[in-house]
Amino acid sequence: MSRSNDFAAAFAKAHAEAGLTRVSVAHILQTIQKDPSFLFSAELRQGAGQCPMHAGGGAAINTDDADKVTVNSLLAFLFERLRDHVAKVLPLDERGQVMLPIPPRSPHGLNPADRAAMAAAPLDVMASVLRDATCHLLDGLITGWAAELLAEEEYYRAKGSGEISTDAAATFVLRTVLEDSALYQRAGYDMLSITKTGSHTAIHICWAMVEAAPLLKPGLDAEAYDDLVRKSLKQVVPLSMASLGMLVHYMEASGIEPHDGLAIHLLPKDQTAFVLDENGLIALNPEPITRFAKPEEKHYTGCPAFYTPGFIKLYLDIVASIALDYGVYDRLRSR
Image (cartoon, rainbow, N blue to C red; front, side, top):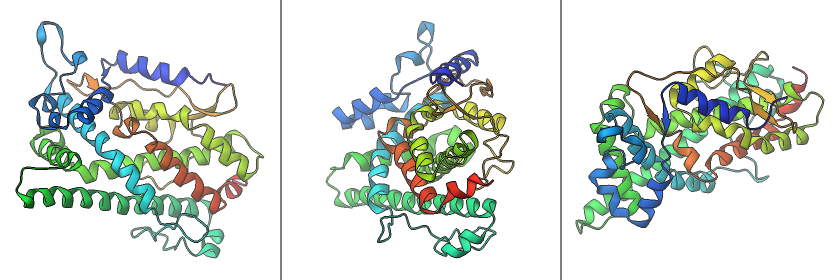
């Protein structure tokens, strides 16, 4: 058994030992809400004037770290609209269940709507199709969100009045920061690719939680597993507060991260990430934590979705409802 706060404390300590200081962007979001003109300030582009980001003698934060703070602040701001867009546009059938698309590059050729074929497929194939289809569904919703933002920005530009909405302004500033950032240009990232990559990671972790439940507590019924997973979300949220490097290393060391880096593989039985806490909830195991920081990296913010109320819960709700609808727990019990 693990204590519920063990992981968060150990993870924060490991970041500090790796020379990393966490910078919360919560007050940057509050500043934007109170004064949208802050979006166009030089201060925002320079790490938003974070007090923890200045060393003795007034030395400024390095450029890459400043870019991360700015980009993640803007994404967190725009993710409220993404959260609302996903909740509004999520396709549901007449039973209120999520309708999954056929994953276009899946090697299995299964249509999630063909329930008989899904039920007849081996467990790892069914899990792969569900994971792949979930990512593909959200990719489409994210593309729609980005298209709406860009159309809104273009609408105000065409008006020529100098007026602009806060969301359109944030979109414009984010794009220009990404285009000017050596860090993001090296990685080839734009708003869409960052969001889709983060979404795939979140979906992967949510599915891993679902798949871990029967491993940790054999013999329950599907509704009990569903309740367990939903109640355990707060235990897994500390992963989203990590630096990207520490997150990836934890996933690799604990067996969550598959060899090919794709979010379509069933959680291995020998995973070491998920354990039970003293209350019988799913928690994260601190043992696989691996200290890591890139050269010159000193600051991290955590995932932008962490700062968007209800966003991570929405993704878990989607995954958990699909798992229940497709009888995933029943299949996992006989694994």
